Amino acid sequence: MIELREISKMYKRPTGEPVVALSDISLHIERGEFVAIVGASGSGKSTLMNIIGLLDLPTAGRYSWDGEDVTSLDPNRQAKMRNKKIGFVFQAFHLLPRTTALENVELPLLYSDRRSITDLSRNALKAVNLTDRMYHRPSELSGGQQQRVAIARALVNEPDLLLADEPTGNLDRDSALEIVSIFQSLNCAGRTIVLVTHDQEISSFAKRIVRLERGRMVGDDRAPEARAVTEEAQ
Amino acid sequence: MKNARLARHSLRMMGRYKLRTGFMMLGSVIGIAALTFVVSVGQSAQRKILKMVGQMFGDSGIVIHDGGGEMMGGPRGPDARLKIDDIAAIARELPGVEAWDPMQTITASVRHGDSADNALVRGESERWPQVWNRTASRGDLFDETAVTGSARVAIIGESVAKELFGNDDPVGADIEIGSVPFKVIGTLEPWGTDPHGMDRDNEVIVPISTLMRRLTNVDTISAAKLVTTDPARSDEMKTEIRRILRERHGLAAGQPNDFSIITAAEIRQMVGQVERVLFFYLPLVAAIALVVGGIVSASLMLVSVNERVAEIGLRRAIGARSQDIRLQFLFETTMTLLAGGVGGVGFGYAVAILGASRMHLDGVNPWMASLLGVLASSLVGLLAGVLPALRAARLHPAEALR
Image: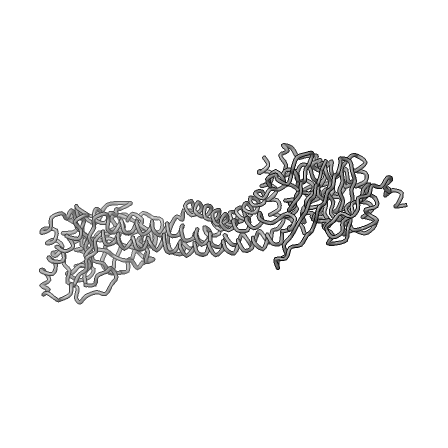
């Protein structure tokens, strides 16, 4: 589904000295995969995720989506792709404060071209088991619940790809496992998931682990049998 | 469809940040309130001035005051020397005088039974209704024979009538002015309060001969008004009147005038100056308040953009285009300041009504001021919103989410 070929990303420090964040990353991800991108902080995993999520552009290389080059798309088309094809989950949840769970989930629909947006957000909340918290504000929800709202928001537009950047970084272990189990069941239902984490335990639940070190890809392992959270929790 | 959905969402979000929205609103509330106040009171004051000036001068009036000085209310020259004969001579010698009316006034106590009222008593000729454009609302006016015969008849103003007769009809009743008995033959058409705060209904009109001979003992008049046929010739006529009066008063070259002349054209010029203050300088001050308010709102909005960087990043990530963000922030600022403007119009109008009643102005009309207020606040909102909106739209999504 998505293919990165020799993707590089360079920054310039304010002092003017160039920094290589990513160099020559080639990665092919098919529909239905569950990929964890792991690495220490500064390894470039967030940069890679921003590029996959069309939030940032590579300085070199080619990124294509279903065969179409997406790095050369104009910013409005990229925004449309983010809206329709990609769902984001962040470490800091990024829920709008003073806004109910339902309205937070609705947000991507506001920017979509859909004519009717009712029910979709309810169904998304149902998918993460939060029907009873629909009218709660983020401040009234636990961290795990907030992240579930964020997942519902990422799912509401039925995206092809779910991108999660350290989704468990702000959560305790129980909540983290709960989130990962949601990812696993979404993946079982056919959803493609790319998850960025520095946590070995979390990455062990993925079917494929891509390792980054100082901007380079140093490993790409497919686990024949990924662990299931259900066994682990017991 | 999509934009309407986003607009509704924005309004809901603004409602959730009441303090921020409220402070931003203040930016337009004060300026628009000042603008509304100044414009609506200004309009009312202008109407009042024009009405008064129209009544006193008409299109082509020339008013001659006894005593020197250039302006109405200015310093007066030496002795009172203006006489009815002077005015009659002007009317005789000068072509284009349509009508004229001499006037002398005293302040006297007016009594009926046990009630008394201090009123301004004006002696006028029988031509005063045409010349001064004022008439009786009840009863009759006096005619030429009343003036030649110094008849003791009076037309009383509504305030005097109320003071002396309450709700009874005063026409036909006997009153005393000073200690002289008069018969009330009519009441004056109500006029209201003049810009000096004088109640122009607290007046009594009597034949000028009666006033000069029976109420006081003078042979001079305080003022006279000429109605001319050709307003365009008023400067020329003023020169002629000055020549005739100086000649008749035997003033040598170099001696100052012992009278003053004001024409309708000169008054119109003065009114023009007042209007400039009312409709340029005062609104300018209010507009400056509005601009300052706009700058305050713009900086509050900039602070708000900085606080909402993560929110902007999230919106970009879930599919907002850069122009969607720009539109949202522009919309928020504009709507906030517009709402503040509407509040300001209400506040300014309330103060205007209060102020107008203290300044004896009537009928403050809010429409012009409201329209101006709504337009001005939307405009200021748009301008104040541009910079924050551009900054918000320029944020790089990946950096905003960091």
